[in-house]
Length: 377
Image (cartoon, rainbow, N blue to C red):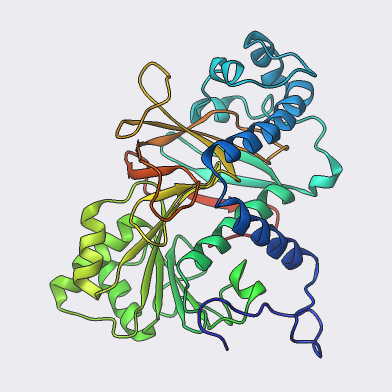
C-alpha cells in the first residue's frame, strides 16, 4: 500500500491494477480532481469569471423552476437571456436558515435536469430546529471532490488507521464501528488502512480510552471535540504515539484549539470549513494556517453590516451560494459564521483567502440522509 500521495487509485478491473480502470463514480471524481489541480492556480479574476458563468446557468434554472426565486430575481433586475452581472447579484436578498425551514417547498425546483442524477433528501439539525435539504447526485459528487482535494493537499498517510468521532448512533462505546477502509470518498478511490468510528456523545473519559486503545494515525472530529479531547489528554498526561495528523470539520476553529492539539499530541491541526447546507467552503492551505475558499464549489461572500463586500483585514458575515445544486438552489445563504478576509496567499494559488473563521455556529449540527448518497466523513 502506498503512503500518502501520489497514490495509485483502486482499479475496477481485478487483473488490471495499473494504470487503473475506474468504474463510473470514482472515474468522475478523479476527472474532477484533475480539473481542480489546474484551476487552483488560476488568478482570482479568472476564478470569478468562471463562477459567474456557472451562476448564470443556476440563476436561469432557478428563475424558471424555483417559485421562491422567480419574483426575487425579477425584482433584482435579472432578465432571462441577459448576462448575470455583479450589480444584479448584489441586489438579491440574503437567505437564512429560518427561511429555508419555512419555504422548503417554494425553494425546491419543479424540474431538476435529468443529467444531474437522483435527488437526495437530507435532514439538517441546528439550533432553531431542523431543516430539509434536497441535493442532486451531481452536487453531492462535487462536494466529495473537495474532501479528496483536502487529503491530497495535506498528503495524508493513506496506509494508516483513521479514527473518526462524530454523531453516530451505530458507533457506541466501547467498540464503536469498524470499517475495512476509509469509506467515501478516499477508501473507494484508493487503498487505505482501516477506519474506526465512535459516537461523539460518548463520555470524554471513554473517548480518551477508546483513542488510546485504537492507536490511530489520523484523528477526525469537530473542532470543539478536538479541543475537549486535547485538554483531557493533557490533564491526564496521556499520549497517542502513532498519531500523525488531526483534521477538524465544521465551522469556526480557534487558536486555542490549534495550540492544544500541538501541546497534547505534538501534531498540527488542519481544519476544513464546511456547512452541511452548502458543503465545503474553505480548506486550510497546505503551507499556512489560513484558508482557501473553494471557488469551484461555491461563491463565498464576506459582507459588512451594510451588505458590502469586506476588504483585506475586515471581518464580516459569511454568505455562500453552492454552484451546482439544481434541486434546491440556496442563493446567497447566510451560513452563520463571520470570517476575516485575507491577502493573496504566498503559495501561489488564486483561491481567495480567509485568514480566520469566527463563530458563532452550533457545534451540534448533524446531517441525516433519507436516500443513500456517496458521502464524505
